[in-house]
Length: 159
Image 1 (cartoon, rainbow, N blue to C red):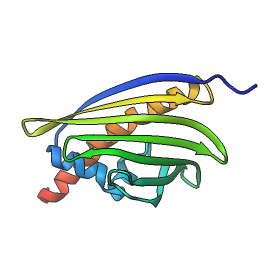
Image 2 (cartoon, rainbow, N blue to C red; image 1 turned 180 degrees about the vertical axis):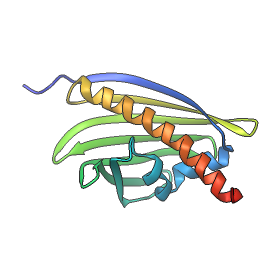
Image 3 (cartoon, rainbow, N blue to C red; image 1 turned 45 degrees about the vertical axis):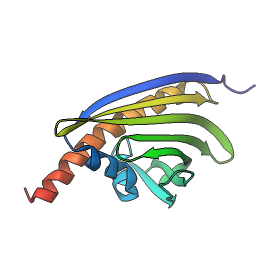
């Protein structure tokens, strides 16, 4: 018998020192996502398809550098520039489904900063470890998003 099916809802909030448009652009740009979308410098993302539009599908491989064993299929169900993304993610390895998630990203302007709220409603097909990996991955990626935006703004200002 396989591992238990597990469900959870993960909510992560971050205040980002960037405009709402800059934050949205970092989600939209696959090159930016390859930088901030990995939880650590030891991991990588390689996009196979990128179709950032309602109904569009992104497909990427990810995992440890040199071993991109995980396939992630992201289907966009709603995109409201600059403040809402609604998408599903299907994570698999080989022919085994690991998890499926419904993800809602809400951006709110807070002066010159942006409040980011990410809600991940995840179903793991392989037990609780996948839930914790999803939580840890999202938390680390959003910290990296803050760092990416800070770096990007410095580059643009020539500092």
